Amino acid sequence: MSQKMMENLVSLCKRRGFIYPSSEIYGGLNSCYDYGPLGVELKRNLKNFWWKSMVQLHDNIEGLDSSILMHPKIWEASGHVANFTDPLVDCKKCKNRFRQDHLEGTVCPNCKGELTEARQFNLMFKTFMGPVESEASVVYLRPETAQGIYVNYQNVLGTSRQKIPFGIAQIGKAFRNEITPGNFIFRTREFEQMEMQYFVKPGEDMTAFDEWKEKRVAWYTKIGISKDKIRLHEHGPDELAHYAKKAFDIQYEFPFGWQELEGIHHRSDFDLNQHQKFSGKNLQYFDEGLKEKYIPYIIETSAGCDRSLLCILCDAYTEEEERVVMKFSPQMAPVQVAVLPLVKKDGLGKLAKAIAENLQNKFSVFYDESGSIGRRYRRQDEIGTPYCVTFDYDTKTNHTVTVRNRDTMNQDRVGTDQLSEFLIKHLSMNP
Ligand code: ATP
Image (tube, rainbow, N blue to C red; front, side, top):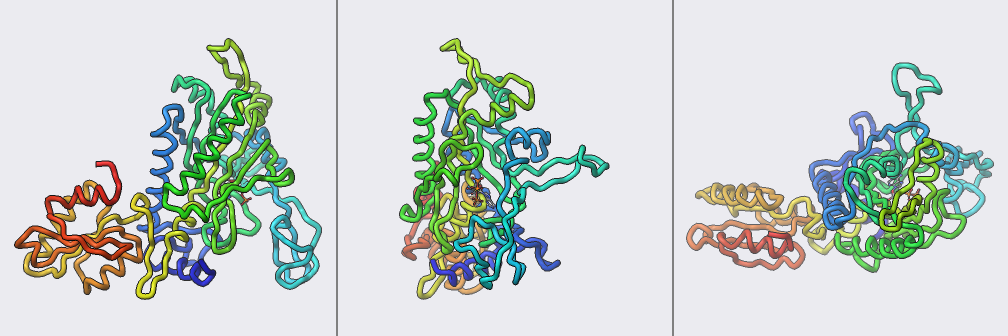
């Protein structure tokens, strides 16, 4: 995908209601975006699919939804107050600001001017709790959802009666005051994470780490991403975060290069040890079988929801000679079935509408009765609708409809009483 196509994709997202710039009537707010009617459906499909893969299909993974504001000591314990920084440099000439670790040379990439010494800049957003704006009332918007899981691990253990190994999954907003946000929704200051923290017995950590690494890579092909555009990148010693013993990034080949989608991190007992120390609470796990106490090791799978969504959009975007098609997998498609009467008159509209209402129980359906049929097909291609169902005059007499496949543009004639089953089969959904 070229940069030009990326620009076309961004404009399609706005035009068709996937993603709008935030606060647009006020001139926008840098790096903030709003999801429109189709974007929100796509995002829900993505989150639901992740939740199903992680929570519903694993007996030993539980869900959680912890608060964004947490006790400020959590961020001292986690190391974020001291270490969650990026090196910031300014160009002395053009005054542009950069993240030093993202630069290739030692001069300004914009004007070749001299750069300032690097300053460490903390990425956490600060605010105040209560009416007094003092140091004592500082709280942070969480920069990752993980800590909410760690501080709840004993609660979840106690109430769910899980045993190690087990995991806790959470989807939620995180905030980072990024120095250089950009590339559309790739790097923003407010974003959503889909994280699963897996608690294991020390000694069994490397097996779990390898298992999750493989599972998570495979997950991206399940949501329809091209296999050859996904790869793993292992962190070298100078890339490792302050908490990590070993880490891999799952990367996707975006139009702007190979970039991280998800981090698989071996966090060892770092976080739980720190919380034990800072809270004064015993966070050991008692292994009933072994009659042994220990602090579990943690394997983290941390995916960006918005980043995965951008990856889905880029991977689906296809420019063909006569049309633009979003080739979403059926599980991700914001609209799964479009119901289109050839004409509104002669009772066709009424008939089609009744069938659309019937299908709505099982699928996400869009009903459209205006404009030429060719134009209506193109509009559905552009938003990635896998099937269009057309009602024509024959429908009235022989009770069959035309079902058009988005990718092949082939059309099948299907009985109206078989329509639901046909769609279930072709959208590969459970009946
Ligand atoms: P980077 O090096 O790109 O700043 P990171 O290594 O700090 O990212 P992690 O802390 O591992 O990122 O976060 C886990 C996931 O959360 C990332 O893989 C990414 O998908 C998502 N993420 C992190 N920061 C952002 C952001 N500013 N905007 C959107 N998604 C983000």
